[in-house]
Length: 516
Image 1 (cartoon, rainbow, N blue to C red):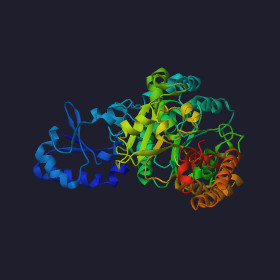
Image 2: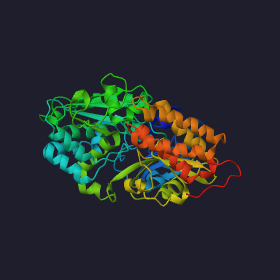
Image 3: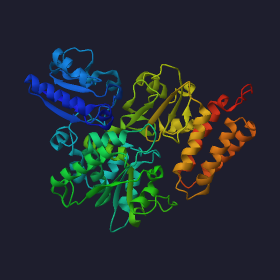
């Protein structure tokens, strides 16, 4: 009998290790022979720790399980998939899970993250074998045809970036994975590193084959100790199996990679600040041009992609570009692992094709607010993303559709707020966050964010409100177009969207609110 229990950090935080130990002890006491397999998370966080049992019909789930529930589960016959108060039925038929298009996260929560045989049994390394047979130019062409765009926030076409590096003349090229996941309400990078690390390794190796790189780095934030440990273990296994090193899968291709741990600076999620940090310098933004694809790490051509971008590549090479491009809408092809967080009933990771509406994600998939109060706002795209009110919930989840409404998809995070939120304070938080995290290199970001927080304080104190609102808007204009990178450039999104959609939170009591 096989029992599956996540080793994902979210599950560990609510007692998954204790539950696994309790189940092992109870089985031993009852003379039951079972095997406990620690997996990644399925991404349904309200059910964690989620315990799954293998049955002829599929995996039956029970959750959230505490150590006190374990004897009762055995008494009820959970090892045969029988009914219990914690039973959620067949896991893959739970509505939250069944509505997903799991391409990038297909193995997450299914296999032991460090079981290479299980990874291969579920299609692993088929994509790399195909890339080696296709060669560099054809591999890049396949990525271009898939329509994959960067999943870190900018949405730049991945294939074009790769082609730039492939055709650049240099004696050394690099592959760099940006896993410095710092946006509020995001956890997709962490989930994949902890739950399916070989997918990332394979995707980066395919990129190396495509552009002629021989060295790679995974830049991970220090706050992810479990992910760091799992990635290092997986890299060691891949080396021993000839999937990294001097002869990839017996070919003449060489590629190796390592994990580098950042010190927690949000700005190092910006690709050029990340390059500076990797080179041992202070994490400050570089002016562009030149672009990293031509002058990147140590001055050499470098592919810098978000973790989800790399992790999507194995599916594209295994199934073909058309299979991936069949999902999505407009210029937004494929799927996005949407991360539902904040005041939401069903928080977790929901991988779905572009085109679903914001309202469907929040109200149907997420189940509305956890508090039961009306949803007032959703921040999309991290702490620098715009706030969307319910009357914009018809917006399709699509790069262009969000941009048309002055929003960002970013790394796929959605943070939900109910009607108790004070949007003036949220606007102030955006400015204060930027001031705290600024690298200090450019004046609009460094000084503008500090002045922005001060002016919003005056608005909250009801001091010359109209004059100070005009000043904030003018300041946002300067930051948006004068900042060196997206930290200062995107901070106006949450501030201006809060002012536009929730003007009543910025007006003194009794003051009429002018319609925009």
